[in-house]
Length: 172
Image (cartoon, rainbow, N blue to C red):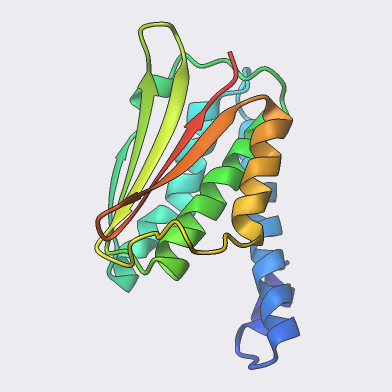
C-alpha cells in the first residue's frame, strides 16, 4: 500500500488521486485491524485511539487544533467485531469532511454515555465553512448513513457557526 501511495501522491491525474486516497484508507483499516488483534477483547476506545494516533496527531501541521476526550467510551462493548471498522470509517469520513470540505481550524471529539446507557460520539468542527442545509450532501455523508445503518446506530449532522456537529449514537 505504501508503494501505491508513494507512486500516486504527486500526480495531478484525478484517477491517481482517488487511488491514493483509497490506498491510504485501506492502510488505515489494516492498521486498525492489526492493532485490535493485540487486545484480548475488542475495544472501541482502543480502535479510536489508534485512529487518533495515526490521523489526528498530524493535523496540527496543517493548522487544525484537535480536542479529544473519548474516555466515556471505555466500557462500550462492540456488538460485532466488524462494527469497529465501520465506526472507524464513519469517524474517518466525518474528519475528512471537516478538514477538507469545511476547512475547519478546530476539531473536537467527545465520547458520551447518557443516563439511559446510550453511548455516542460527537465531532464538532469550527473555524471554517458553516454547513448549510441547502448543500447537497456528497457520497461521504451517504456512506456514513449506510455504515451507521449497518451497525444499527443513528447519526445526525447539524450546522454550527463556522462548521458542523456530527453525532453518532452507537447501538446498545
